[in-house]
Amino acid sequence: MRYRLSGPWLLGLRAFRRLAGGRAPAFRILFFHDVPKDRFAAFRNLVGYVKRYHGVVSPEEAGTWLLGAAPARSTIGLGRYPCLFAFDDGFASNYDLAKQCLAEHGVKALFFVCPGLIELPAGDQRAGIAAHIFDGRLAADSLPEGLRLMSWTELEELGSLGHCIGCHGMSHRRLSLLEGDGLRREIVDAGDLLERRLGGPVSWFAFAFGGIDSISRPALRVISEKYRFCRSGLRGANAAGTEPMAVLADHIDLLAPTAYRKLVLEGGLDIRYRRARRRLNAMVG
Ligand SMILES: [Zn+2]
Image (cartoon, rainbow, N blue to C red; front, side, top):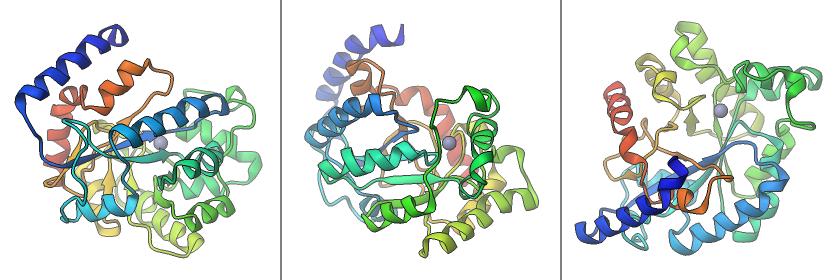
């Protein structure tokens, strides 16, 4: 249903924006998870499209904007904001994708990883992925063959290529269910471990699951002690007034029809997240 309506919806949205006139500069974060090899072609096309019609933002530029500097570039068209590419969970497919598709286009991205899961012995990692990343919805033996997380060496290499590594929690726990030491371990100890392993500061955090019910006021307070930016999974564009602890991002489904993906890129689904965004801003404020 939502896919069938996306074409007319997109046309309506564009017409409305032409009438409404120019909008303030902003950027969007597009995020992905594991991207199997058979979706690399779709991903390549998307990067090409975004580069051409929206523009691409690096993690560094996004950080500067969020800290108050005016965007260096104006937006390409009405409602078409430049985008930052991000990847959650640290799957090994992200490494191959960076070396192939991102390198081809000269795109620098943001990778959110869980250091506690990377540290698991190889034999326990699939069980860890099933229990924590898939929240027990999948059994370890039903995960795709060969599914694994990036190693420390691969992450170091991504860092040396100019990509940015962020923290996604020690072991992908739902922060709204934790308090006290459990919360600090998942947020602060995780960042300390990442910094020790990668030898540099980690300034981005993205909370696991990304939804408004997966985060809490105490969790955001702890995140703000350790990190400069906290990314949610709530849809929306990030503009001048965006709070660095309440950064918005759009999940992109590479299997969705083109019109639906364009609709997401142009903010057609933002309205559905208005209440969640308000709740997140209230937690931060
Ligand atoms: Zn995740």
